[in-house]
Length: 111
Image (cartoon, rainbow, N blue to C red; front, side, top):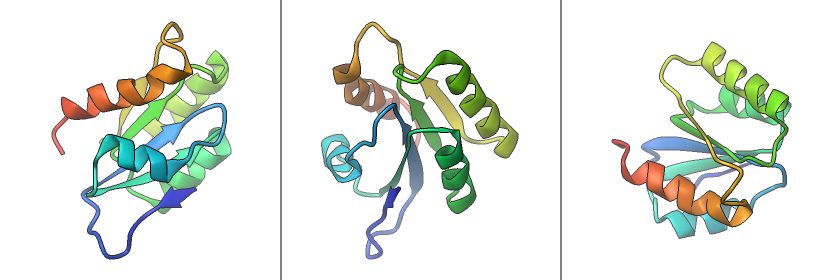
């Protein structure tokens, strides 16, 4: 699932991976990144689709996905790209910690 505004040039694509489908438009607004394109995935197949459809800059993986699946997703990303960054969220902060986690990482990364 992706959300791109065809009128706005996209400087980077961010892939959000979680146990349940996320509302990408809300994430985009919450993160305040008008020049970023967002995609979402809930499993390895959807991650692979996003990697084929877009040049993904950053991937954020929530802790709700089982460890072996998370590792498979990371493996697929690294096999697909030498430039995509991958960020794994901790379990302790829970689902409400996902957007603050993404925001904190992105604020420290060059665009």
